[in-house]
Length: 264
Ligand code: GLU
Image 1: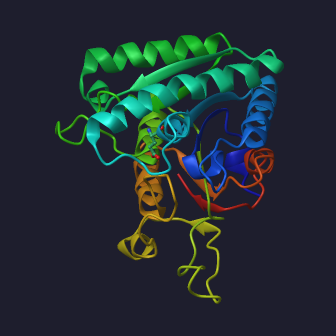
Image 2 (image 1 turned 45 degrees about the vertical axis):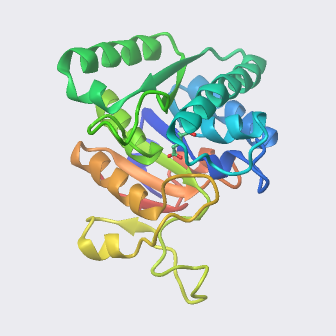
């Protein structure tokens, strides 16, 4: 058992596009519904929950009938704008079923670099936590562009670690399409073994991550390790685990040995 996880009160949960959508890119309603139920239940049990959700671009793509992430930047931003509203409408519907109030916060990287903006964001988070609300965070994809240096997190793994730092989270959970960090790529090597615990994020640990793995998401194992590194630097522990069965989140938070645990 991972006792420091069991004791965690403030928890940031990040779910990637690949865990929220079917193979064909359409939103997986069953998973979203389960996520709303489990997170509400954790919140009811006295934990403070912050959800970082990807899926805006994916949902927007589906809405305008595209099956490929747009290369064209304005089109990608427009797709995110369309999809973010759809995503929140769905979350609203599912969380409403459990009478859980949610809120939306869209962040850009510059917010974290400007002490006034950062403090405003922090105050908003703190107030939402006091009110028992579950904030749902995404990058403000419509105005964060890679073209404007320093304006973009680029992936929600990094964003979720930055949020964990901002709110002083005790635990960051990254739900993805793989069980955790393996000794080598399990898709290519049947001998690959899941690493249960990481004490130090060394160059060897980083070298275990391949490139981006999924259909629609932007990250990959490396962005998860880098996120765990950001989290660790501010005293937050991280678990990287599969988002295939959302209910597993309860066991993770209970401190069961699921996924890879990056110690604080
Ligand atoms: N912000 C993007 C979206 O909601 C996702 C970024 C990521 O996949 O990390 O579509």
